Length: 118
Image (tube, rainbow, N blue to C red; front, top):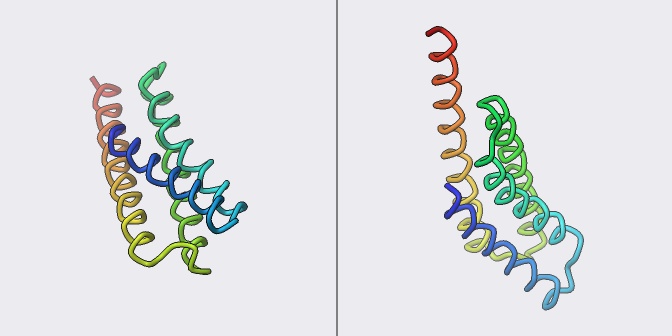
């Protein structure tokens, strides 16, 4: 998960640099930059979990940040700062990260409940 999230982050960061320099677009670019860099940072931080609850909490923050990233990308695509193909590709990657994350969280929750009953 972290490698693909890292690559998504790099792609969005490079997009933000382009938008800020070439298109003089700053507000949504900064927002998508913040949300996507938080995704990678929180995934990295989740590796140092104190407990399963702490791990799940960090992953729930990642979920929110991925959703915010998709929102800001959508906003950037509406005034044509992003071409449709760019947006679709980035959105697909973000949704893939979200699906992987959701499966990981479900698995962690089910393992947590199994250990609780043992």
